[in-house]
Image (cartoon, rainbow, N blue to C red; front, side):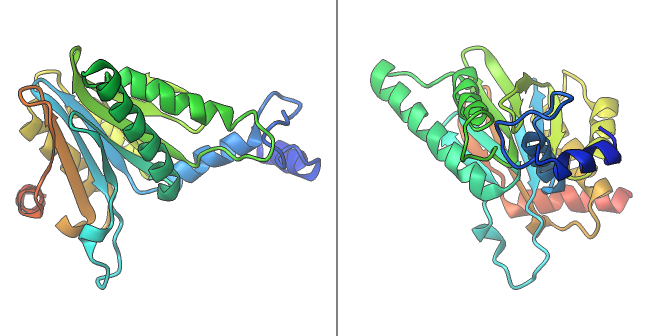
Length: 246
């Protein structure tokens, strides 16, 4: 869509209601939500041979903020986690819904929920908001990572309710730059330790004045299938090693 056509559509009111298509078949409110994702701080997910990891920039620029109080990686179940780029208050709504579904699955079937079921449930709610008057799309993309009976898995959802499964992906600001690094360095034989270094290296390349307080990371291994948050000391040691080589 050109700038001129976007302006024309705005003047004619096609962006004022989520249920109204523009003449060229676009839902402009959904496209605005996708732009919100691009403005969010970056989050990376990587599937490795021994598990899956999530690494994210919490974008803490005020030294008076207590970094531990800023949550950007969410635990859905023991074997399942998520991170987001965009409006994080929207993310909490979706994560709490996912947590409830995971608990219901354990109570009903006495087994952990599979990753894809959670992804589909979240995307169904996202899709409803694109066709219901009085609502707005969720202004975020989610990375959902977990280990189930099918092994480690990583999915990305967008504001329209679409989802894709990835070996490695990124959402948020500087996604194009980070994606190039992932394409160049990703291998299916990566260990979690190697994947962590690639993810932090990619963020260090794209984010100015990156420090360990801004980073959050979690892993889920194929052996114990439990989400584990990495300590600040671990993250700092990897970041220091990367910055020394730079």
